[in-house]
Image (spheres, rainbow, N blue to C red):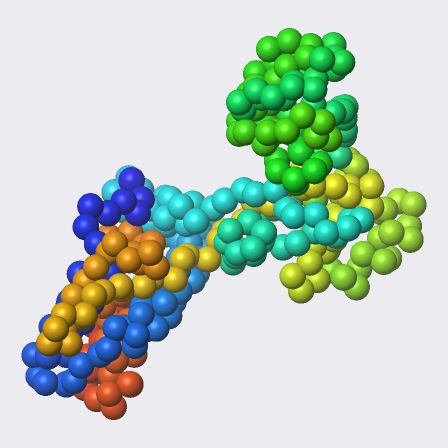
Length: 320
């Protein structure tokens, strides 16, 4: 499978190769800060190429021009892209407005939103009367009677934390996928795992849809709009934390080559630094990363030969 699993530090290998090429003809030296800047841009270029490459592979398959078995192109690209595919509950702001995925709300940034999933049916609500690790305890609840099943969504209304039901132990106790209740008396909501995918519509179109009884979004056929860093869900009754999940391709984390400085001023690779981050691309893309970074280096040190060499090698690789 074409999955990004590295037994070595990819970023250090790429940097060593780049420096080796530059030093061979005394083209110059690239500082760690410059290398990290080029590395971020190179990784993003290749990441975006995955999407265009996947689209091209699909078109070739539809035109019956694609190979099969070991010559298949679509499968490996899809597997690589899926390593960046994540699902997170959106942070609720107010009413039917939610925060788009961001480092402060979901821990990452969305590159492309694949779909929006809505859970509109509330099963029950209540207050915790006890504490259990990875559990929800309410001695006055009727969890079994109400038909709560594994996969239903549980929200701690006091903290905003979301979890899912793993097992229904009894009418009064649930086992959850994470420990979100640590204090007695916390308010909770439980929503059905039943989900409907919301259709994305433009901001200009949503007003027209809402004004029509025939096209107005409802719980069976919800819609959403993306307005800057905010997402609005329709109908407006979908208006609480835990009701909206977002499935999206996240941006790859910015790579950073970290180091310690020796007495003579030479930086030495040190992966133990807290801000260290390796490339998130597959091992097979080491060559492409080196060529991309060399292009940036050639422009930076004003050596056209370096940039031309890297561009030529990349074009030759793409034609193969």
